[in-house]
Image 1: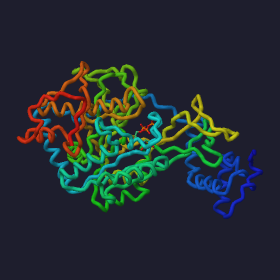
Image 2: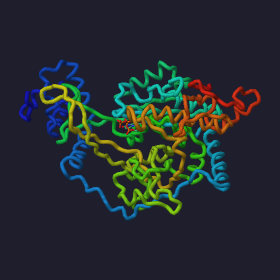
Image 3: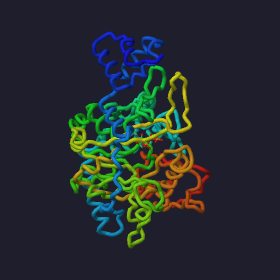
Image 4: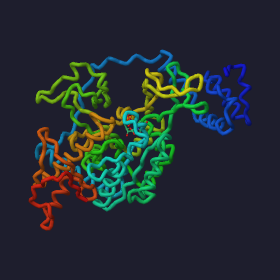
Length: 493
Ligand code: UTP
């Protein structure tokens, strides 16, 4: 059935707010959402209304005007002011090592005094991975197949134990995976966390539009929506009362990371110490690119501000430019690991530092005008997302800490190939193999340097190479002076 302006009255409403809502939908020319109104049962009509109530039509209109109807500002190609930022390198000499160890003490002190929290963002759809479950629930550890969430949980628990403190854990979900995530934690008894130490909060979603700016329908009564990007973290924290919760707890610094990084060094006290010493407000870690053509965003200074620069925004000359020591001039890859101060989060949410929306054109399954499901062969949809790194330019002070990729960054994005469960498992095994080698244990490797077989060390056994070494050097440790001959697997718990 065709709905047009003259048929607005066909949408019977029970109260004035609902009538006004229908009017708003028509005035924004989105009345096609009522196309199947007459055939919808009562509960589905309610469902459609509830979704429409949540839509910020003014924002939508702005986004359509800016990004779809052709008024999009030209991307600035003026990169004359692009510069590499100063970074704190991986310590190579005594003075750098001294600075790192003094900073660690400062970081440890802040962790011990309960001033830190962890945020894991897990609201993404994980489209590339294509799993029907939240990414964090994916079994991933090399030997025991612990889930990604369990690995993170054990790291935080081990850190709390080490420093005899509480580190509250805030997990961001989205409407698409919130229920499953909460249920997963419940089934797993919150991995040992008390329920007042782990919090779930849902980020906002935005409707997905077709290429002309019309709301896409997922069924005859449901609008397609998508989470509003990891930049939504700031606003969700504020709206869900968690900024207040952090303030009440005395939390001042937040370790932010993405759920899919299995090597994350959660609550790294050295990073925190550097950040506190500089009185920084938002600080990123970086991992060095070795291949100039690796398609990752980098951290740089654009027009005087710290920023993330997409691979596609760098010219070939910039991508290949080298420092005198041979390293890439613009090689500071962004693994999306940040420290955020709570007062900075508040400033961003108070509207002082608005984050822009970015448009992404994608293939999104939906129903067509006849109510039939369509799996598009071509891009048919526009999504809008805010990015966390757009806040960097507003943090007046930041430190940028270089870390070793093989120790801190291995994301699970794809089903196979790069950044897949297979690479994550190999990278974890390699990391544990390095820790064991550091502790004097001979670990067999193949010609590519990959550890043969599978190794897993529970964070509750050793959180890092140093702790492992200490454990192994104890006289009663059965691993001492061992040449490990793998039968295939080793698990230390
Ligand atoms: P990605 O951009 O890699 O998205 O998110 P994704 O959902 O994991 O995977 P694709 O792109 O759909 O295949 C990086 C991190 O940011 C989180 C994700 O959960 C992941 O930890 N994220 C992303 C959110 O929490 N919310 C969002 O709206 C987007």
